[in-house]
Image (cartoon, rainbow, N blue to C red):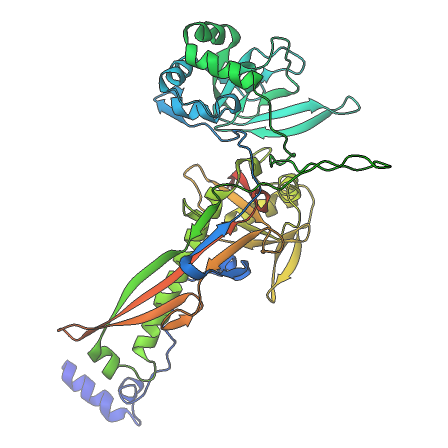
Length: 466
């Protein structure tokens, strides 16, 4: 029997309409277009948004004296490492020094040293004879507590320095802590003898250090702000000090950034294929979702206003070992008042969970906007996949205080835009070309501001493990 005869016999035995044929007359049940990129976008949800008229926001602060607490940068050629000469002006004694020839000579005076894990770099009570620049690795610092026991003083890592006071202090200065390498470390070291020889032949550097050594320091509080003179505890008719609160002469201004795209929809598609779902509406919905994802990524990573790049160096700390531990999170959130939110990559949250289990601790949970999330010490730990993971499988954890009233971190946007469809986002019709393609300009305007340095902190070099 031929194939045609077989099909004919099968058709004769069928008693009702088949499903394959029936689907030609049926309308399928379908979903809206799905998008895998959509994330919870917690940062956009928890930031307090401040109306920014005129497209700029100025942060006025009290006068703060620069203390040179930045980090150094290094250049590597194979295994050879050298400090970038201009970066040496980040050392407090060299903060205002700009003579490039002298800085270059100083950079060349450093010699490279390697330290293995557990090796002591400097010891408590010994004389300060070296300036040590940490090019790579982690160094733990341990001091002596009030009752003679050891006390942890934190961790230094890539770009940090030790012993910078050698540039100014007399020979009897001593180390007030013991520094020990916790990983393999590469450091650049300048000893006292090399410094003395350099100063003998480098007049500009010697004159600068002499000036810094004898220059009176302006009165300032522990935050480095210009002091406000006050009197307390007096009796009778004492003469009261006069004072005023000085402001920064050039306060920082944050301009609104923009994320934009041009959405194109052919008129034939919007005319003929918009039932049961409007094609233009769905195209706009997915485009807006992509813009919001980009907005959150920029608020985290933008070099001008992103949170990772705007954290003060004094508010950046390192993990004690590698993975994020409860002790690391404790130090992170206690460095500021009213720590409101923690942001971490989901893999970092998983790594933190493993460390808690290892210590026999059960992480807490909190409810944020009706959703239950992990938390630590009552501070919600929110997932954010925009925080990058480096090639070495390390990442960062962000902590922040939020709000204008609390001098925290705020989001900036301007509402009431022409053709606005969401706060701070508008869709403007751009016309139709001669190929019947309709164009829409989709834009969102945003930025973020850190009102005072301790509003934002970062736990860096967080190892994710396996």
